Image (cartoon, rainbow, N blue to C red; front, side, top):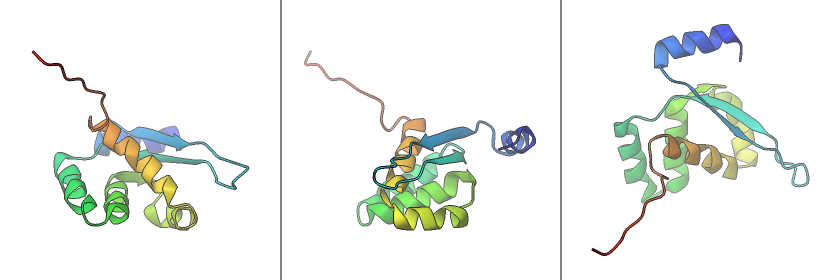
Length: 108
């Protein structure tokens, strides 16, 4: 991504996040880097509701909603061949909004 494109995306969406997944040459899994905005509360609520019945579709919808570069159409062949990558990348979207923060509990 060029600096000009990044500047334009930041002006339009605010903070932009780069999510990268490493390649696994042994298994033929390619590396992937995407640029996303943080999911909104409403988008996460929709994801949580839909994940109860179809987690793959829910994750795909969340990712597509937040994806800025490359396009969902450009990523489709890779996600069709390696659908687990969609969960790895989508999991980072959840991390952006605090859904994976470690918590603790103690009896008082």
